[in-house]
Length: 126
Image (cartoon, rainbow, N blue to C red; front, side):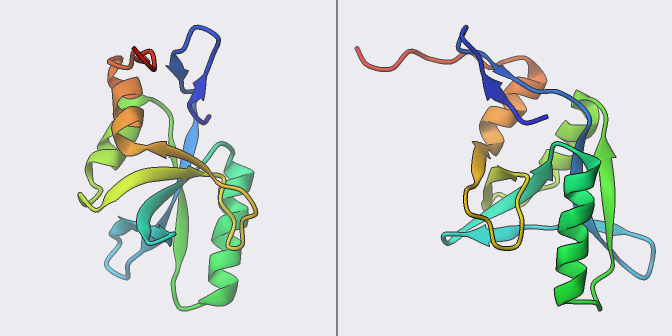
């Protein structure tokens, strides 16, 4: 699921996590990146149902773009997915729709830190 900051200040992540990928005619898949307020972001989903809903929304607006839902079951799979992102993608948006009212955003850097076990929330202020 999405990373959450608990009382201890640590970011946690629960699996599975889902991504929606474009399916190419040659069998390859590519990450979908969306623009939010001028920034490139990777949409990820906490449930397969949310990912399928997003997939249907996109395909209804552009039927020529076949999409597949990809399930990441552990840290290794999610890290592999995140490391394929171009440097211009700095954030992950969670459970997005095509016309979201609210977005939950996590930086790719923080998410990689959680996956690698390196995340320690630094206290704010002096």
